[in-house]
Length: 521
Image (tube, rainbow, N blue to C red):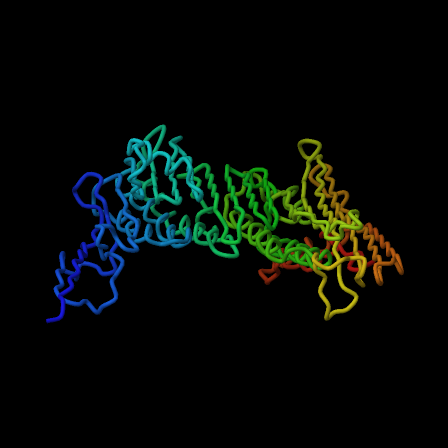
């Protein structure tokens, strides 16, 4: 008779947190439908699963076990129960932000706290301290802070690390009323969309409704994220909204994008067509600077997304009293209609040619808009200045088919080293005396210096510099006078005339142009 061998296998049922304090959850390969215990006599020809016990009583290829901070079968815990089994931060945070916001709102603003901590039998640290450290030392975090119009602060946090997943949410300094709770719940999808964008590879900005706060409910917002990248390094994100000002900063291994805006309480904001024309022009300037300076297209895309989405906040925001009086209407005609801002892209520099360390590859781009008013009463002057600066340098091969690599010795290469320096500005000026427009002028300037050094066999063969500089000043008083008179006549006659569209059509005469070739007489 052939010998009988036996194997004893226990397959526990997978369940979410239940009313048992600090429940330990093991993750089998099958769910609920599997029997609680299987005893097999004789030869087992099936492939053992991850919950098969070895002859020494240990699990073969065992999955991690987790202890839960709170009991319960709420929606948030169910999300975490599924998410903690994922290996990527994107998967672990998928749906978790919106679930956290919804649970805080549904609980009336009562504190929410939950964590799934991986069991470590060798760690003798008290459990509550381990759970605290899971948040404190998390390698991936997303936090959101909202200030309500009544002065309370809503704080939310998502934390992901090697030992598990944690979330918490609370209201500090007051309580949320019914309208604030409803407004908070309405932000759930926007918060989750922003998280989804940041955890994508490459990352994207999906701020959407998150940044379009109802000023009757919320007066400020701050969102921060710290995320590990699959390629190595870490990406950080900082977003702040406070009244008429807002800022965004995204920093990672490929470079930094930063944007700060100030609408001066809405005093600068123009009509839809005017604002769209200015927005389109700025986005074009960003693209063209990236192409001319061989910058990172992904960083430029992030700047464009940030610029578009943060400016969209002002599309339907209230304008201050007196916004449509004669002085303001005329003065804004030559303005962009957008909030003042400072924006920049900075990429890490490198020196791939060890024999010529002065040949630095780099890309740094700054662009800004500032608006000032002087005088008082019916006699005032307004000025808006737009500026841009580009400093870039890069290497290229003489042959389009060949690629330069740092592994090859530069003294044997045929290559070009390019440097590009650009500055540009546009200044519009208006003055009023007794509410009558007396002066309207614009000046556009752009300067560019390109230099190309050509090396063959590691020896310098040519060094060519190409400077360009253009400056144009225009008196726009007659143009504005004609446009406004035509608009006034059309309104008297009840005919169709879109003043904003007409101003946008002529905006090329005073908008920022960084390419000297595009500034015409």
